[in-house]
Image (cartoon, rainbow, N blue to C red):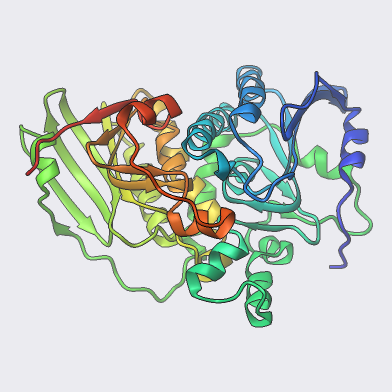
Length: 413
């Protein structure tokens, strides 16, 4: 199909008769408009810094809008040209992004029609927000991925300017490759109009069915030839302390499942552990286990996390890792909406989009004493900001940043 760059931001604003509400807050401008006789909200997230666009200032503007969208189930158009959370703000940015992602997830699952229009860059948290939308409109030069090229190159020990790497990255992250992965990804054909796209993108949503269908489709996207994940019984010293009434758990390639009896009663256990970064397959298996729980939602679900980051690999980006990470959060939020008390506990390391996807649907996030929560692993932060000295963070600082409400001291020696 012959394609051209989609309409400019100005054309989107014109189609919606956009009127800004107040001044911009950092990188974010919000406003209202009308389309086909109905009111539409518009939020613009623009790219003015390499370290990300969404921090505490931007979230104070975005979150109230998303809460209105969820309450009214009103249409929302998101313009995203951003590398995601402001890495330069550190943990404050991670806590702020947890909040805005929670609100965006709630809006999507409430049935609000959400459409995403993408600029040149859509990395990290911005790519997660984009995948909460029903439809995404790409520019022909848009790149969408959980990790930007510099982080992937650093992880692979390659030079981001190397021609071979750039060709592989383009093949993995380009708008053309994203169109092949999901029919909801679009570059407008030369004879198409933005109004036609908006009409389809803002059609009434059936979110639970849509997210479930997307999960099944992503399972088909995984490599056909892969090693089987064998389940084995697992014993952990931290679980011995957390579950004095006993527990039964199995682990299969970094995915933990089971039941435990804490002082607060019976809990279903689901977790991601292991030193390996989270790739698309493990994220899908976690989501699959969470979807299975929806058949008979448990009273309590504790999600455990000991995984420092998502995988910065081109093979995961080829099948759109962002979509798999978003896929973990949807069934958790649906369980919470159906009465399950969802809590999350960080056992060791956590950070980035993996943390956000699991923490956002949780009522409470706790961290075991000594656990480390970071906006991104040190190597990724270095690739973005240069060398940054890491310092120990206290439980009070985690709470102030909004990344963990409680600390658990297990007394393991």
